[in-house]
Image 1 (cartoon, rainbow, N blue to C red):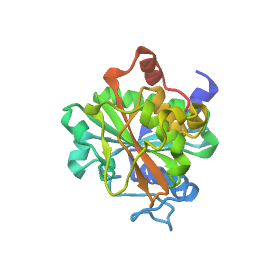
Image 2 (image 1 turned 90 degrees about the horizontal axis):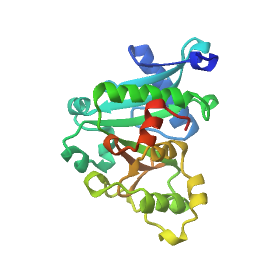
Image 3 (image 1 turned 30 degrees about the vertical axis):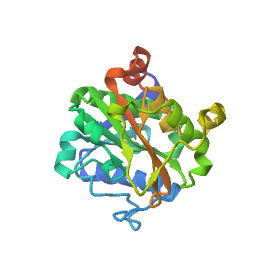
Image 4 (image 1 turned 180 degrees about the vertical axis):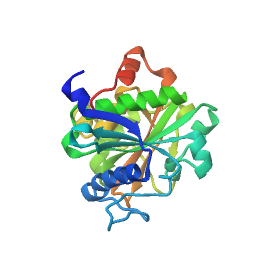
Length: 255
């Protein structure tokens, strides 16, 4: 095992202090860095919180060279947990009827973030390895969740949104749809007017990572003014992953 491999550990939050560490990192990324807000955000304590936090699993990436500091987070909400809280988090933004009617085991991925000094390096590799183990342990079959573009100006994002609409739309049986009145069409440009290279440069790293795994998008984006984002819903059917995708998924990768 290399020194870098020994530097990181991945585990589930197991205490109130673990949860606060996750919420603190989320605050630094989603609130302080990206300008988001929410009715349960604690600005005094610098914690990004909501009503789902007590009902989900938080996957934590820690830097053991810094005393186990939490440097990455994934929030995981299984369908059995969603039944207890009453809904999935993204259900406020998207009609998840097609996924619910599938009868398959669902896992919602959310609040994924990595501290700035760790982006673009091996940290995400380890976080995704931990996610792969979690999925296999719980037998999750469909992974989904919202991923975001920064800002709320859809016209400025016409290239990447249109690319996702034309090239990466989920099949009808898994095609969730953004809810009105926040539904934002993604088909803003005809396909022959898309500069694919320019469009992909504008796609956030997390969305690119999902696409590499064979992830697809729902119908329409959701403009979230509170969090200063345009959200899309990514859907990944684990049965449809190619062997190449499965190797990436079970091995992890750097986003």
